[in-house]
Structure formats: C-alpha cells, structure tokens
Amino acid sequence: MTTLRITEIFHSLQGESCRTGLPTVFVRLTGCPLRCEYCDTAYAFKGGEIISLEDIITQVSNYQTPLVSITGGEPLAQKACLPLMEQLCDQGFSVSIETSGALDISKIDSRVNKVMDLKTPASKEEKKNLYENLQYITANDEIKFVICDRNDYDWAKSIMKKYDINDEKNVLFSPVATGLEPAELASWILEDKLNVRFQIQLHKVLWDDSPGR
Image 1 (cartoon, rainbow, N blue to C red):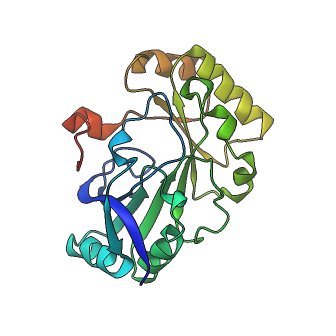
Image 2: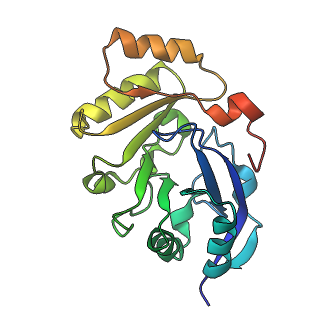
C-alpha cells in the first residue's frame, strides 16, 4: 500500500497564488530539506501521520470542494506525492502544488498547477534553487518570490532578466510576513513598472495563519 506522512488535511480559502480566495482542500505533507529564515510552517518538519493514498483521497473528497493544494513542508520530498497528485487529477480535482524550487519538478503530472518558489538571498537558502526547473514552468504555472528587503527585490528582478522570466509567466511577489511593509514592496513594483502580481497572504490577514486554516 502506498502511503504518505501527512501533517494535516483541512478546508480553507487559498491564501496565495492566482487562486487566492477560492475554497480549497489543503494536504500538508510532513518534512522539508530546507530551513528558510522566514519559514512559517516549521511544525510540519517532523511528526505527522502515515496515511494511505486511498484514505487521503477519501478525506479530500469528503469536503466536496474541487480545488486541492498539495503543500508542506516540501511535498516533493516524499516520492509518493507524485502518484497522489496523479490520482487526484484522475478523480477530477483541480490540483496545485506549492514547492520550494529546490527539488526536481519534471515528473509532476502536466495537469497540476505548479506554484514554485525561487528562494531569495535573505531566505538563506538561495543556493538550493534548482534553476533547471524553469524549463518545466508553463503558462499555467506560477513562480513566487518571497521578498524580505530591497536587496531581495533587486535580486529577484535580476533573476527574471537572467532567466528570461517574462510576461508569459505568472510571477508572484510576496512581502515577508514580518520585516517589510507590504506598501513599500508595492511602491517598488509600481515605480519599476514591473509586470508581476503583488500578493499578501490572505490566510494571515483572516486567521493569523493558525494551523489548519
């Protein structure tokens, strides 16, 4: 029986990405090989419960919500994440994955919406970015930069130029939860006429990012 170690499965509003505000079932996998300075899900690094793919899909189905987000931790750190996403797609769910960009995304089912981070210098995990992943990002996927300061912002712009991340890609700029005023990041984007999507984590506005929300 194929299983995954799961921290939580819950129903909430999507707080990030182009799906922000939409009711979504979240499947949070346990474990992550990264230790970003601003991580807000450290409780998912260890523990969790071993659950079969069949039981995961049953729990997801019980919420009667078409959108499913696979998240972590880093969900791709568990190999069975791939068949889980495939089976959810086969069941008719619209599936997205939130991934750090440090692990290979090439084998993710083409029906899945990939939301991939590129880690900035202030995250302290910049060296783990796997830039080869960019070739597998399509117009249906998204690239996210969590911006901590002006240096991160300028770095993100340079990466967009270096790797030709242009208008054909959905690019998200998100201010770190503490340390950078959202309005400051918004003003930089406007001043530079940068064609990116500014976002604030909706779930933190609504619920202070409590686990299970």
